[in-house]
Amino acid sequence: MLLSENGRLLGSRFEGLRSSVNGKRFSPASPALFSFNSPLGACPRCRGFGRVIEVDYRRAIPDESLSIAEGAIRAFSGKVYGQSQRDLLRTARQHAFPTEKPWCFLSEEEKAFVIDGEEGYVEDAGMWYGLRRFFRWLESKSYKMHVRVFLSRYRGYFTCPDCDGVRLQPNALSWRWQSKTLPDLYGMPIAELGAYLKRRAKPVGDCRVDIVLNGIGERLGFLEQVW
Image 1 (cartoon, rainbow, N blue to C red):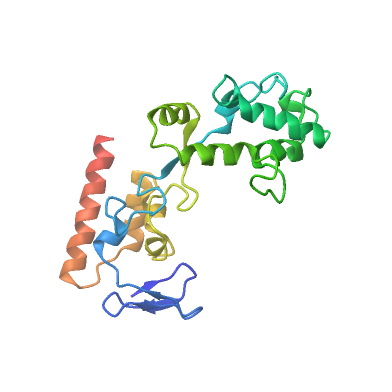
Image 2 (image 1 turned 60 degrees about the vertical axis):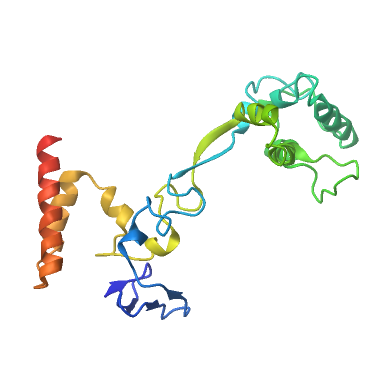
């Protein structure tokens, strides 16, 4: 028997689980569910890596001392995508946007206008689409080699927003032992985890469970000695 993330007793691993709070059903647990190396346990968004590759706007706008008119948006420099720079300047004039002000002095609303585009954006209506939509459009063309090369200059690794870097899918994180999820446990220092298990993980009289507990304790002891 295990607890859900809200502490409610749900059921056993043999019969599956059903939340007593919202009625949501969970599949019976299996070892693969708790492994980010398995398709069953890995976070769908990052595929178990804990990080995602996305556009890094710090690379797209590397020098914040420059203004929009001075070419602060590096991705719009050059002939290939220079039209986007002209589109931005054109719509900026319509909105009295301060194109001569350095990027670092722009307000959050002004930066959002550049990155996210005009509110209520309609395609092909002469509106500013924003740096974000510009990159999405490029990603739709990533079957072209030169586009992939261009995008690689502006991408970076970020902590996965869905699993917060713990690499497991949501159902795996719904299981807790002693109020701790699996990432809570493997995130603890070796010595601290070993001591914690000695205090909390007591033999239960089930041969299979006791063998596993002893094995975990022995491995942690060995790691503590060689660390």
